[in-house]
Amino acid sequence: MQVVAIGGSPSLTSRSGLLLERARHGLQRRGVEVVSYQIRDFPAEDLLHARFDSPLVIDLQQQVAAADGLLIATPVYKASLSGALKTLLDLLPERALEHKVVLPLSTGGSNAHMLAVDYALRPVLAALKAQEMLHGVFADDGQIVYAEGAAAARLAPGLEQRLEDALEQFYSALARRPKPLDPQLLNERLIAARWSM
Image (cartoon, rainbow, N blue to C red; front, side, top):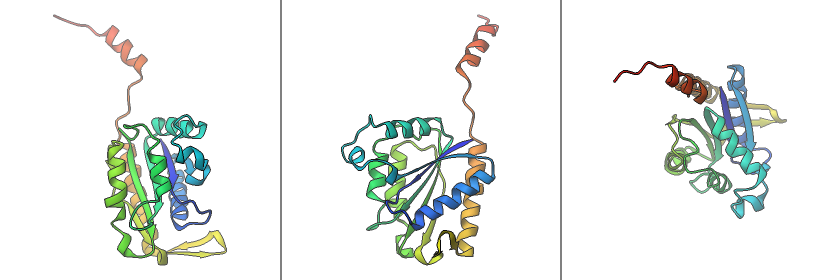
């Protein structure tokens, strides 16, 4: 199984980035290969000028096409997802998330921003034809405590449990996805089949 993780915060130290990192480790413990991208990895000019031919954008498109699922994290700014993240998602092909399972993660200043994923991010993911969007994980700033760097940061016990439960549901959804048939195998089966008329 392969998952693409996309972090939507432009900041080097962000709560949404930390939540994404914990989720990535949780999936890797389950044997899932995770390919990670951060919005700050992409040149601003490529995003602002919608450069579909940017090498990094092409790489992202190819990784998403090959992936079973998408893990996406965003901070909530002004009751919506990160604008830079929306710009990056706009560079994906129209049906990029078809047959994919998606787990959204988000962080915000207070619980008042909890529904931002439903009203801002989900419509974008639906437009990209996400097959299955799981109920995401939202954390307010008080649930993620930074100490000396991200390694020492702590998640509130309730948040840690919600993240673990969401990752288990995500993993189960990935495992039950139908596997596409190899075109060569399908061709061999069609040729070898006995047809009657």
